[in-house]
Structure formats: structure tokens, C-alpha cells
Length: 228
Image (cartoon, rainbow, N blue to C red; front, side, top):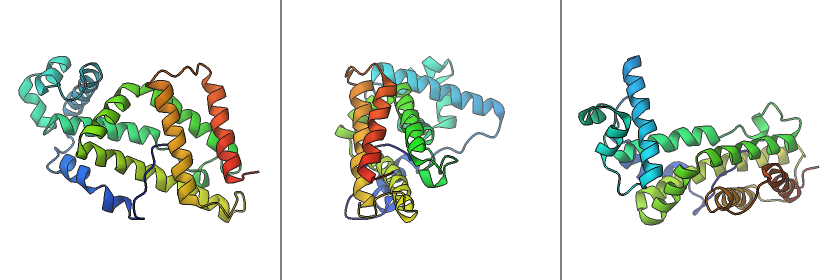
């Protein structure tokens, strides 16, 4: 079961509510390069962009900062990206793919939903810790800029839908309390996990034992959903 930020507005679909960021960030986006050399240069620019964003924030970064960090000519940037916003979007997409794990119903561990929750919760914490700098900028910009806010909501809907789908499947299998509202449970539990990760890995809340933290979160999931 995947963990992440959750949001829900008026019961509308992910696609209907997340279009603003997608339209702005993806309109006119450069196609992926066809040559290995091009792919290597694009990857180098993304790695440089990440380092610069984490070091200097988002607002103050110029494209020349990214190309200088990458060691490529300034004009080369526009061969691969339209703007620094597009590079940030690419970094977020890569991070989301890393954090989006299979839900319980489709997991190889589906015979043991508790172990599946444990595994994906720990994986989420590990990924968040590794990407803490990027997440910090994402949260800051989401509070300041409507386009980034839409990106955060889009991310939230993806996680919410996957978690709710997993909960419903467990209910259909008789493994979870059928009286629990799957959507609201997904909203509450996944938001809890996201907030815990933010407090620990970005705000520095003392939680040295990640294994114990993971077990505590798993117990809350299991008891809340009535999983035996």
C-alpha cells in the first residue's frame, strides 16, 4: 500500500483537478533524446539541477547556474528543457515513480497485507529521507505558487487513489473492516505518514529508530482498518 500526501476535493477525478500543473509544465516539453549521448547530457543536467535547487532553493536559481554545475554550454540546456520549471517537474516525476509502490492487492505479498504495509511504509520513509532536500523545496513552493500547488495536489490524488483502491480490495476479500470508508481512511492515514516523514526528515524531529517508527505507523494502519 503506497503512502504519500493526500487531498480530496468535491469527489472529482485526479485528471480534472491536476490539469493546471500538467498543462503549464508539460506543454511544449522537449521530447526525450534519441541518442545515448543526448540521454547522458539530459541526465547530467537533471543531476546538476537537483544539486543547485537543494543548495540555493528554486526562486534564485538561473538556468546558467544549472548548466555551469553540469559543465555544459549554456545554450545546450534548451536542447533538452524549455525552462527550469520543466527540470523540476522531471525531478518530481522521477521521485514519484520511486515512491509509488504496488498496492496490497497487486503486491507479491498480498497473502500478508500487514507485511506489505510494513515494506512499503519503510520504502516510503527511505525514499523521503533520500529526497528530503527536493521535498523541502516542493513544500515551500507549493505554499507560494499556484502551479506548484496543483503539482502537489496531483501527486496527492495519485497516492490517494492507489491507497483507497487497496483498502477496498482488502474489504472485498474480508480482510479489512467493511464499515470503514476507504477514501477517508486513505486521506487520513496517508496524510499521517507524509506528515511524519516531513517532521522527521525535513524539520529534524528526533526519531533515530526508523524501524520503530515504521512499526508504529504499521500498527496504526492495521488497527484503523481492522486488519487481522
